[in-house]
Length: 91
Image (tube, rainbow, N blue to C red; front, side, top):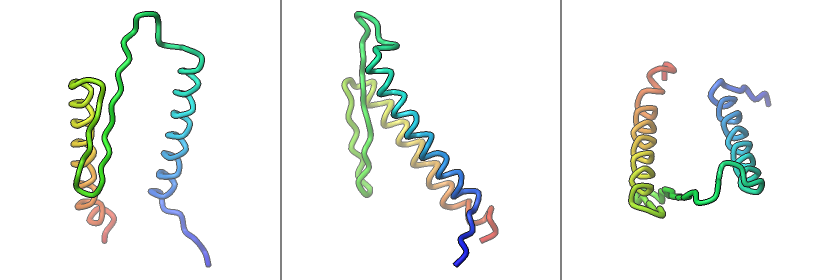
């Protein structure tokens, strides 16, 4: 059985590896203490989507709002790609 790799499959694999490299770079930066000086304020937040229910969390309201906006943008892009990609690929 011959497996044909489409451009999107290769792009997906590249993006996964890029994400892994960025996570390790971030961890290494935290271990070495780069980028955070004395008195620096560090905030974090995130967005988890389980089915249609988004769970937004953050250390402040601003961070939670940013996470919600990023989640909304990703959701809109996913809907657009779901509707347009089959037409663009001739499906």
